[in-house]
Length: 143
Ligand code: HEM
View 1: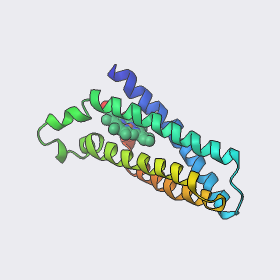
View 2: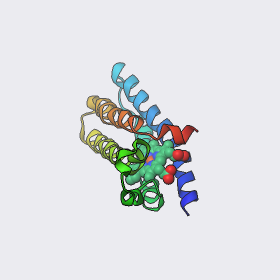
View 3: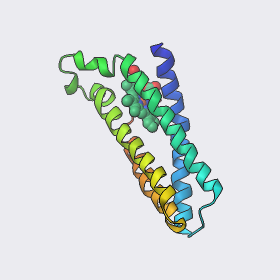
């Protein structure tokens, strides 16, 4: 079970990050060129929301079965180990905050005036992406 969830979380990360990146770049282009927000833009933003939420669910599942997640809190001195602290605390916490921001971006863009929609997506999804990238276990992922 652990191996399957860990692999799914590891593979889905590529999709989630690519779709989120596309949504941020699309919002940047739309905002900078003062384009009107169309159904294509809505779909790209929605895909990024869905893909990151699936990743959140996979992450929560992995967190409770992995030795490097919740169980690591039982290990003495675990917080002093930077790699362990990353997977047991920093990565989950920062990513949850990032996905909350992305969700806020999605819901506020819906209520925003047409000319302010790209700005909302750009701001919240952009910060979300930066936060996610700042706390990824790069070493174990790309090893
Ligand atoms: C968009 C959000 C997220 C992305 C892109 C992401 C991505 C990743 C990546 C690339 C890895 C390394 C996988 C590997 O070593 O092969 C990883 C590991 C891990 N992630 Fe996430 N993650 C996200 C959200 C979360 C959340 C919200 C949680 C928990 C609540 C979480 C818990 C974990 C844990 C515990 C590990 C270590 C698993 C292990 O190696 O045993 N992740 N994540």
